[in-house]
Image 1 (spheres, chains in turn red, cyan, brown, orange):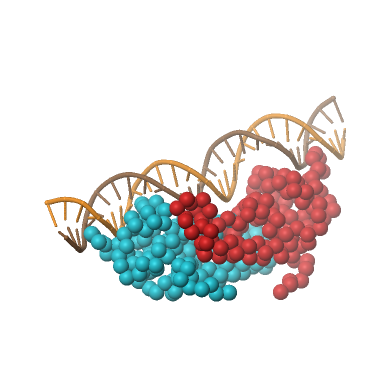
Image 2 (spheres, protein in one colour; image 1 turned 120 degrees about the vertical axis):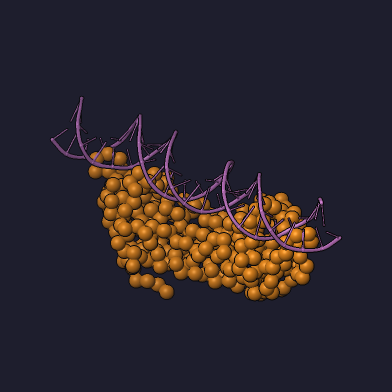
Length: 138
Length: 138
DNA sequence: ATAAACTAATACTAAAATAGTATCAGATAT
DNA sequence: ATATCTGATACTATTTTAGTATTAGTTTAT
């Protein structure tokens, strides 16, 4: 049971890195190097963040990316959803024709609510929280 | 992000089925048929439950399995751990040599605590809870 | 105008996890 | 003796995740 894949992980790290450097274009090569992310992997991840308008990019020499939105408005949930979609349950609970109890299935309901809870937790974590610039909230 | 795999799912379903039928040997074929689980799959899952002493089995004609422990003592966490192991974090956070901040990494801490929370939630759900025989606790 | 430094898009391969199947040996009730 | 069951194990298929490579196009500096 893995909560976060490399896609999301790398994206989050990149965003945190950018949050620390705000207001200047940073190349993907720099981020990759500093954060230990495979460059080619990162270069497939960043355009997703661009499409969702989380970052701005500029092509060409002295190009790169930077944050488009304030780091405290970007949540971990948002990033995870881009790369991993919604939290999925055991799929047969939805699809399996044999599962007659689908509508009343207790486990299904419980798992859904646990998924929601995880989402809410991640929702409270912003990129800014991960920069170490803010004091931890309890 | 999938919370439960088929292994765990099928095992849980089988256990719930058994919990409803307590005190008689039930064949894996019956469980498979009634619960819509691929028979051969289930027959690989049940021995794991046997090893952990969650069920008792008898070979041969009129053989089968039944619950060894009271259904309210068997938790979903216990079953999930058998098949999925502990909740894993994003692994690079542990392994990646480049992650200098490992010890202080805020995200890592947060994910660990979220994982623990999920575990605690599943820990509160017993097989009995899933039989529909008990009234739901809030 | 052209070379170097950059991103965008896409196609591809590799590795790992998950899902499912098949086979054979042995136990037991009848 | 045989049909009905489990145990063990090896195998294949599918899906997801991870990572690489290629080509095209943009922009700055010279």
